Image (cartoon, rainbow, N blue to C red; front, side, top):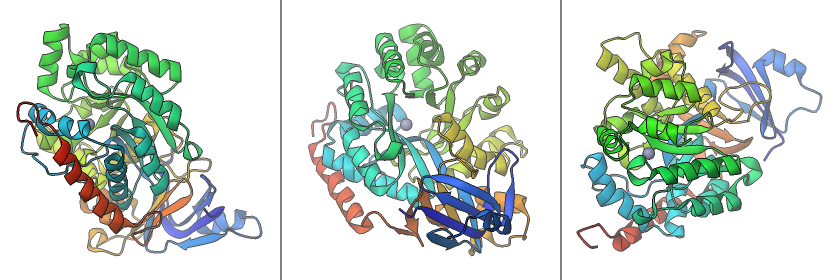
Length: 445
Ligand SMILES: [Zn+2]
């Protein structure tokens, strides 16, 4: 890792409190932090003699904070048997695959997943999956910032236990200079008793870490909660102490007004995952109401099994279009606000000092090549034009360089930390091996 990296002469989209965009700007990275941001001349004038070790000329590039994928699963079985609705898909494909997972498969699946994310400008993933030791090893190697959580459910479902999650915390929390963290994961309420939810909240409190849970994803989940607990999912989570500012609640599609108020009261963080919700036929979350209530809403792709890409640019576009279409209102989800969801909001949700280009913040930075059809035409000096392209015209292939924690993990679209063909080959092999081992309930192997 170079001690200092100067990214100069780019269009610097800071996403800072003032919403500043510097045309002909520079960003100076010092170790794992951003040291200076501003017009190139000013940054150069403030620089001490000697200069940085490495200089990146960002002329013709936009420089942004790295994207935060707030609801994420490492994925092994993209596109496999994915024609089913959520509950049926979980029972016949997702759970059987992750029950048959071994460490080696988890490692290669994570490397392949994180590689695609880095390619699309994602610098942080909030990843709920199994075999976290293997995931942490993959995250450490490829260089991504990862918050990992286990897939905890009641024992009879043969997924992870809170003891597994606690062990994973002990083994991995704070690894790679703090780049890897472990929080407590809960699969979802249909696989959880109230006792498990209370124990999960207690464990998170004891460890001083966050919670990651699927909540209010589908109407079937809402009905399940009403039948088993006599209340809606968010009311159950509230009563069991699951909600709070360190909790990421993923989906939240079918929130009642009361549930939105509970999210507000507890300061719970929301991950909006519009592509997954659409693909699985789960509906459209009430994001305008959530934002009006003052909730912090970030964006997630969910999993390549239900997306089917990890491109957060696609998610940004859907996070605008879906609400405009269903409310018949083109004023909703304007481009700068959507970019904020994918950067600042996600970072804040995880309690990270990132998501914006400002001195003292984490050195998670992406460079976007503006020399393409995606960014043509582009009016010089016009930030609104650029924001529009970022949300409505671009996809992840516009990302040229990804820097995480001050380390260049992709440059000129080449991964620097791994051999990508090997990763893809091994992920393919792992998928076939796990399919051979997996047992579908009622069908045998
Ligand atoms: Zn999910």
